[in-house]
Image 1: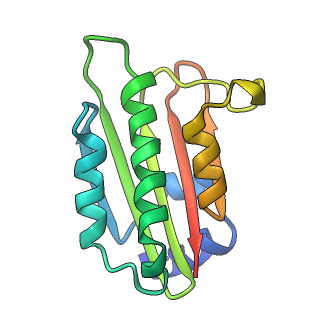
Image 2 (image 1 turned 120 degrees about the vertical axis):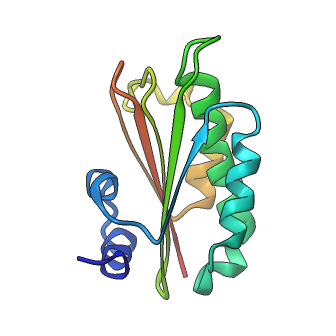
Length: 146
């Protein structure tokens, strides 16, 4: 299945596992450092957002926040790591995956411990799906429908 067909599947039936193994319209790897969120925003602005162009600010805020969380929480202080960003575009919307290979966390843990950034992502994106496990990294799939 090509990136266009995958985009339709991910926009209408978001699945982090599928996103991890699917070819994307755009994919880039960032070093997990303080400039990573800005680098991702610059790269995403170059992506043809089509039917969700009017939601560019929502997309940039959510992706920037997911990357900031990875930079802040995924890797121990003083260590380096990578963050992979994949995006799928279609006339029905946009799906973006942010993945790290860091410490991971329990996404089903106490919701009162959820930070402002994750609450912001849940409010601005149509779907936020998280796959994470302690020691196994984290993948955040966000869907923005047209």
